[in-house]
Image (cartoon, rainbow, N blue to C red; front, side, top):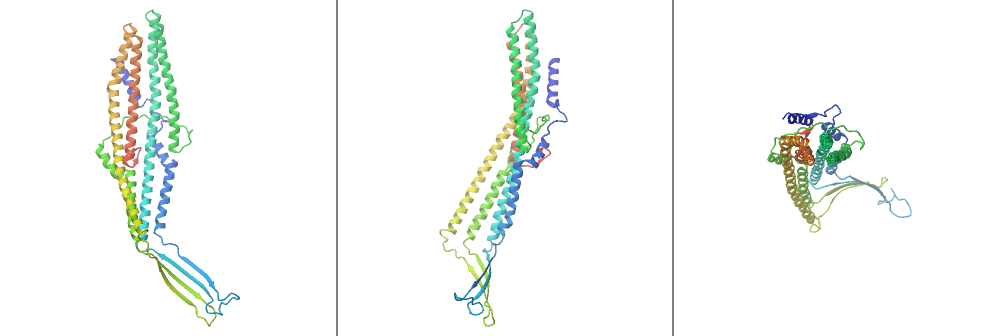
Length: 421
């Protein structure tokens, strides 16, 4: 029992922070850096800014037109001031859309800009979720290396016991070789985990916006987080705040404005023009004119009506896409929440039951092996099972945190202090 207590004390010390140091890689620091430097975030921010600048453009009047020219009477000489029809001409015109068209164009641009702005929020949330997932993958790789190094010493105990039995003539050399082989196989796994560390560091640097070879520290120790919110609460929050849903809602609003705009196209636009004609000399009076030009929607059956039908079809498409997105988000949240709750329960099962019981079994079998009551293969099998359970514990801790990162990104809540509130 003392051996079990000592093992549990060491194991949970290992869990709660045996490797914490000033050089620990902090998740929140990475998130803050990514929000400032991530190329993807900066690109979406610029796109949102560009969309905002399109709003006043959409509501502006068309540029006015200015015309100037000269009209001569005859071909053989310059007749300005000598003939009544020889004149310099100047005019200015301005087109005025039918009342309501400009405001609808501005509304469409505003809805589009809001959609792009929400997309920018979605990019930030997805980037944060991606950083959190990579961070926990990196954490798992480091933790697996620690676990391998810890358990190599237990294989050394088996190896020592096998050597003692072999020296006393109670065992065979093959038992020594089996223990040594298993130990070297663990060392092989350690090298594979080191390669994973390098891979996750490269992906994490790229996501944050750093040079791919920038040094990263070791992720800080993680405790199993607790989530007080229920699935129903998460779904409600997602329906209200999910960027994917909000983007589709803006698309529906923009499509509704386009329908109203298409209906306005049945009404004509007006162009006002003022002209001045100077004929020179005192014998001919200068002239001026004021005219209005109105376009006539004569071909409304093949143009304006079809435009309305097109806009209505686009509105129907946007509405169905909104419904599909709501279902997709709900399904994804349910999946992530299921992973979250299942991994939490499994982690607790490994920590509270399987790991301590398997360690107790290993110590018992090792003691029996040293007295010749069991075989080396049995001891090695028990130790491999223990290593598997310990590895699976950390896998479930990692999956637990990654699932939380996913469904929190989908609910669209604001990131503060390293945790979505």
